[in-house]
Length: 218
Image 1: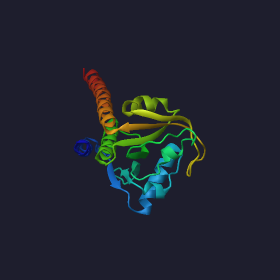
Image 2: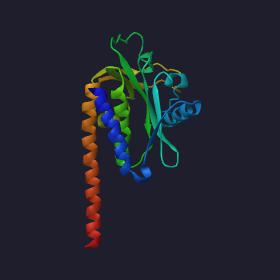
Image 3: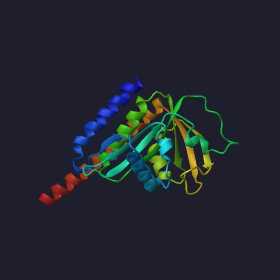
Image 4: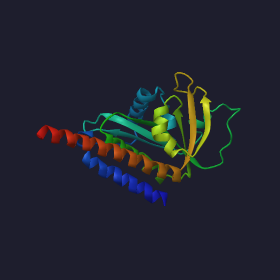
């Protein structure tokens, strides 16, 4: 069932691109070394971490471009562990997680039209739902409270750990992060809620523009 939902979200994502004009996004599956280096650099610019290429190759990784073939962001779904999000939890705290999971990582997107976020996240969530794992794990910087409240709190099913994490390859320093687990059901329901919120914001923006035009023409 979730695979069908995922395919539907990917189709919605592609349809959304029709309304983005110069803010269109085109996704590409990473295959070449050059592609992987682009995602590495883009995520390092966004999050300060240079994920090893060999790690990204353990799953399905994507980058997205604009009309000028300029990289705008990307993400990766790591299907085969060991997972970095779990490796960074202190050993004396880490509890075994006996479930098949996929890690969501390297998530990054340059600013642009609000609808572009819908295009991006529809594709990310759609690909995640099409995978074979029942659960998904990810890490988010604890200091990014606005991002957590706006996005991740809607999809989280359980927090595995929150606190200082071990410094792994590609990290310039140890950080304080929350390692969270979600199910496909939570992810789908949370995304629907986020999409409705984004639609409401976009409607407010459009109504504001129409009001300004009406006042200017009065």
